[in-house]
Length: 101
Image 1: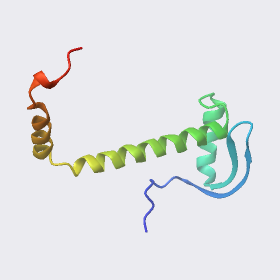
Image 2: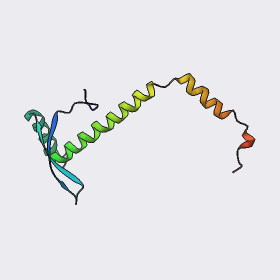
Image 3: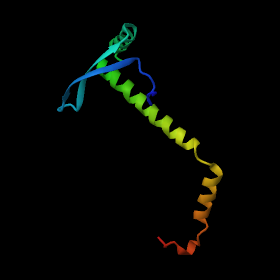
Image 4: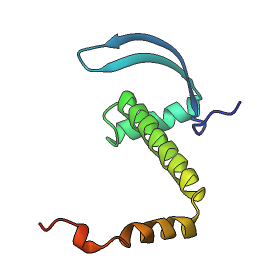
């Protein structure tokens, strides 16, 4: 079965412990050395404060993209004509029935 998330170039292997004071979990990952060198270069260039921040942002962005992709897939299932007809039906009620504000 395929994963619903795009493949990341890292694999989460083991959650070691949760740091309840910072609301973070420590994890061990396996990553290709070339990718790690690229992350380290970004940290040295002050693009990220740390490796942890770089990975956190990468995972957050991947999850956001996954949610957008799922929303787009659901929207493609809609029938625009049927949605328009239903919207117009809702607008056809007598406006006198609406309370005055």
